[in-house]
Amino acid sequence: MCIVVPGTLGGVFGYLAFRSRIKGVYLSIVTQALTFAGMLLFFRNETGFGGNNGLTDFKQFYGYPLRESSTKVFLYVLTILALVLAYLSCRYLTVSKFGQVLKSVRDDEPKSRFSGYDTLHYKWFAWTFSTILCGIAGALYVPQVGIINPSEMEPANSIEAVIWVAIGGRGTLFGPILGAVVVNGAKSIFTVVAPDIWLFFLGGLFVLVTLLLPQGLVGLGSLVKFKTKNGGSAGPAVETGPPPAPAVADPPSIAAEGSSTPKGSEA
Image (cartoon, rainbow, N blue to C red):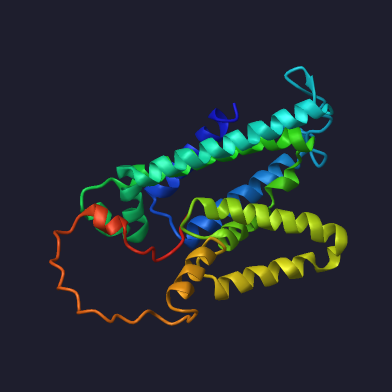
């Protein structure tokens, strides 16, 4: 059910949205509005999901008590395994021909469409696949927390996920994982030690990474390697050898378009 229900709802919404060619900030606004409407709906007691209190009192997981340490360890290992499988699945998709076409759709959708690719189905599949991953994540989250209520659907949670990506590294698969670990680890510490300054710390970290590290924390390695290569200088390397021979232009192809530098960060 955690795969079928989110996948079905996400698939229907994604098809209607992408068929209408809604993208960019407009897609963000529509998705946030839909999430907010869903939150208001589940806050009503008539839905049968507990209203403001949500669903509570989770005691067992397929007959195993959730309070037992062995059950907690099993759920933790299951979560790590799901994360690894999700990463490998996304990695496989991005390096395949499908991923190359999806990159070209991201960089220049009209050119990809004029090249003969049905961009609707590419975006639709990626969107639906992401909703399935979110459903699996929610199914693993609830037993370990023990409660779920409509407040989890607040737009602020979506913004926090965007902060994970920005801090970890945009345009990468490992960056959001690193950003989630860093942000939530800092949140666990600061909300106990200094809860009043947590939001200021998070905002400052977001601004700092955005201004000084456009590639996020995953870009620190390449930055250090670049400085080491240039003798500690942040400036570009100076070519001392003969100038390279002029490159012969290859025929335009969709794969070449997919390897270009992204112009934006559409999800």
